Structure formats: structure tokens, C-alpha cells
Length: 393
Ligand code: MG
Image 1: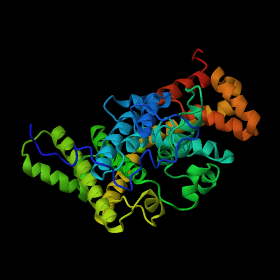
Image 2: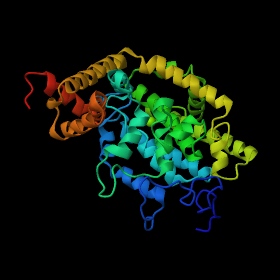
Image 3: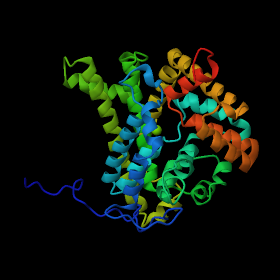
Image 4: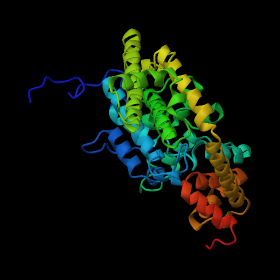
């Protein structure tokens, strides 16, 4: 094959403002450089080998894990985010390995049962500093994973950690050291972190449409009132008469993803051409994020988000599930925080350590770590073991 080298397949040098090993702020604990891998490949590989990553398979975003085998889990969601983020990174000559690491780790701190679980745990932790899932993802990679002989956590690079943190309250940022500074000083994260955050949005908006349709909670007629969906749907119907509904939906969803990715790449590239950052520092000190959708796409996107909020996330069947999930989380937290002896040995040991360090708040934090680390099905079983007299062990 003598095809001309394509910008997308040739191993081109990264843009001068991309994150590279050479400009990385490094790891919390110094380590020798990896053999045959970049620092960010090593981050990605450590994430893939973590226990928290494996648990993503049995955690959900909108639907509870056992509802159906075809719905997205946090694992498949994270893989979809990585796919989208890598495409965007490569198109913009940014560091694909870093975006992949951030994408695969971005949901590691999520509680069981998606947002319902997070809200419930935040409420339980109100008096003890609250619970933020982004912050918890950072806590997982910095503290909670126990794997390596030389350091706690995964000892990831600064840039991967900053991408995982995304945002948190200023109060919490003040306690995080270097990785929280950006939030206090209102500086931008790397372009790789910016784009992975938007890849997350593209992924969940699109796959929630797909999963919502499959679950029968929303239908195509409703969705055609949303311009972003409508446009893709009309194109598909016009071009492929008589296509089965299943293929129509998949074709529309893939076009939804594609049109958002194309818009994001084009709009970001034109901003970069205009602002001409010379290096990573220019990116960080820029007044605005340099990776973003066009105004029109941002508006289209918001319409879709509002639709999903009103018709899917607030659907009574989703709400019933969320209400149950919240009761499971509250029940577990209260039982364990009132009597840590109810917890298995390992969780109880960690609770005692944090209690010694910081009293009630430390104990509550350890209980929140334990509950947040549960998969959906483990939380349901554990709740039954704690509350149901008929349940053994
Ligand atoms: Mg996500």
C-alpha cells in the first residue's frame, strides 16, 4: 500500500503546548523513568491494573447494574470516554497517552448507583467535609489503592492527577497542595485535561440517549424535538429508507458523537491558531479554556442535556431506583458510622487508623471510603447483611 502519510497516522511531533514527559511536574514520590514507555503510558497502565478500575464494571451511572446487560457501566463509559478523548487529542496533536490515563481514571471515585449514590453520601458526610466524586477519584489514586512497595496509591504524574480532579470546592482545593492550586488561582488545566472533560460529556449525552431508548424511558418522537438529534435523525432517515429502528438509532448516536467531536476539534484548533500559545504555561495562564465547542454546538448540547434531565434522569422509574439507592447508601453509612464493628476486618482497621488521626471526621471519612468503593451489587448485598435478619453472615 502506497498511501500518502496521513497526519492522523504519522507519528508527528506533539504541539509545543502539549504535555510531554519533559515538561511534566513529575510524581509525588520520585521514581526512575520507565523503560519503553512514556510517563503517561505508565500512569494509564497503573490505572488499568488498579482494583478500583475493575470495580467500574459493576457500577452504574443512570441504571442499576443488574437491570440489563446491555446498558453502559462505568467501565464501558470510561472506555468510550478514552476512545473519544484519544481521537480529539490526536487530531489536535496533544498527548494521547495522558488523555487516555485521565479518561480511564476519571470515574474511579464514584459511589455505587451513580449520582443518586453520590448525593446520598455527600449528605451523610455533610458535617465531615462532604463527599465530592472528583476529589474521591483523586483520593483513590493518591491514597486508597494499596499496591506498590515504595509509595501509597498509584503515584501518578501531576498532570494525570490534575485531570482526574477536574474541579472541587475551593475549601477542599486549599488542602490538596500543588494539584489544588490551579483552582485557587483560577488557572486552566492542560489542554489534555480540558478535552477529556468534554469527551466525558459527549460520551454520556450520547450513550444516555441510546440506553434511554433501549430501556423505553424515552422515545424517538420526543427526541426529534431536540435539534441536535433531529438533524442527525432526518439525515439518516432520508439517506437510508427502510432501515430497522435499531440500526437507525445506532447510526444517529454515532453521528451525534461524531458531529460533536468534529465541532470540538475545529473550534479548538481555530482558538489555538488565534491565541497561539507557545507552551504549556501559556495554556495554563490563558483567561479562558482553549478547548471548547462552538457557541452553536454548546447551545445544542445544552438542549440535549436539559431533555435528558427532564425526561430520563427525572423519569419516575429512574427516580424510584435513585430513591432506593439513596436508602441503601444512607443505611450503610449510618450503620457503619454508628458501629464500626459491623464492618469487615480490613475496613474496620482503616477506620480505626483514620479515627486515631482525626477523630469523628476521620472515622466518617473511612466509612465513606468503604461505602464509595462498593459496587452496586455489593452495596445491595451488604445492606441486606446488615439490616435483614434473614440474611446470614
Ligand atoms: Mg464520566
